[in-house]
Image 1 (tube, rainbow, N blue to C red):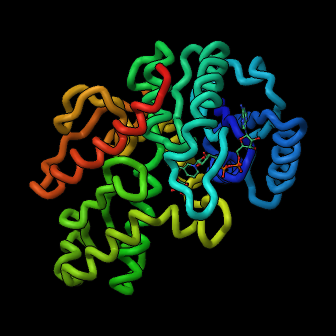
Image 2 (tube, helix red, strand yellow; image 1 turned 30 degrees about the horizontal axis):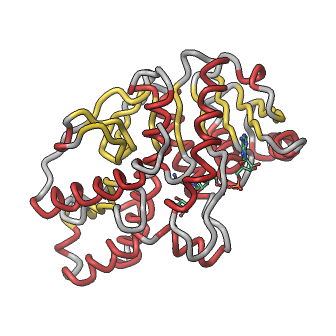
Length: 308
Ligand SMILES: NC(=O)c1ccc[n+]([C@@H]2O[C@H](COP(=O)([O-])OP(=O)(O)OC[C@H]3O[C@@H](n4cnc5c(N)ncnc54)[C@H](O)[C@@H]3O)[C@@H](O)[C@H]2O)c1
Ligand SMILES: O=C(O)C[C@H](O)C(=O)O
């Protein structure tokens, strides 16, 4: 299994590191436009192999897509991250051009590739890849919900003073400060609804903290986060590589599901060897349905800025 990661920056390198440590891929190619940067990151990571006990071969490449040929999965992390005070949507001007070109280059050299889009504004970048390529919809997947759900579980565990492994929960909707829909009514601790342990007010606070999870970290770090994003991508790549049929909320192209059409937005899906193998339809509460529609309106406004 060969995996390519475009963008050897914070998220791309973290993603390569977690994939290698999990030891399920034979080869990870990291490609960046900055001369020597990916080569340096790959060499540094390879020098952890004997210490961390992995056999995955990590190669760094400066902008030569012929070296990505035959990739099963490719992750697009190229583009600029936001700075404190910015929204993800403000990145569209620079990142749209980068994502479109990168996707075309990847597909030219790996026609059967499954693409995972990470660059922000992610739902709109995923939509752009749908509109600008001929790939079928099962081979274009946006990463946002897996990360947002991990942050939701972190916040729930914190509120309940519980170990995170006791918690289950999911965030759907757009990957934006206002568009995320944390499914508080469905979240559980050891299969008991979290509302049994937390007041409505505390649960609302957990949801709000989850939605601004990326902005909170951006303020603390001066740039956006990378460890949890890299880990989230690595789990999705693993689900595809190992044909796990595992459920993640991912940005998927919808054609009527959740009453939405011609949009990419976070919904529960199953990931396996064919990429996005199924969109899972779950029954939402009336409030969740309304939030999902509102979230979609926000994503559409950003999509409207694309020059398609
Ligand atoms: N979807 C998510 O949940 C999520 C999470 C974290 C970050 N992100 C997004 O991921 C992107 C990357 O974030 P980061 O922190 O790694 O940024 P970064 O600046 O650390 O890395 C980006 C890398 O992309 C490279 N690059 C730029 N243009 C390129 C091109 N045309 N071809 C190849 N490489 C190119 C840069 O040289 C740089 O090394 C940002 O847009 C950020 O907002 C999304
Ligand atoms: O917050 C960001 O801009 C990066 C990413 O989307 C995140 O949620 O960490």
